[in-house]
Amino acid sequence: MKGGGKMKKILTALLLVAPMMVSAQDNFGIDDLTNTGLGTRGLKSTIAQLLNVVLSFLGIIAVLIILLGGFKWMTSQGSSDKVDEAKKLIGAGVVGLIIILAAYAIVRFVLTEVYSATTEA
Image (cartoon, rainbow, N blue to C red):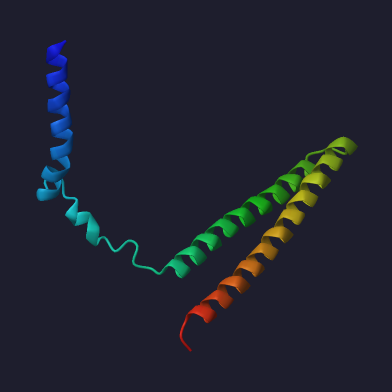
């Protein structure tokens, strides 16, 4: 059991010294990764780009829901239950698309106002 205490001390010492050894030399090419050009954009433009991507993705999903509803309607073969289900899908897709477009308009307005308020005239 006494050997276990000595092993813990050695491991503790290695864990304390290891970060200093790694920072002293760059054997793994970490310094090469700092000049990749990533992260050079401003926070405002990064947030705007991220929101545009998210809203575009949601718009694509809404359009796919509308297309799925249309496909179900076309393949319903006159069954009133399937037609009603397809109408509900199309309605949900249209409502979702309206919400997404409203969110886009609100985000665009807010970001434009924030940008104009925080830049020098």
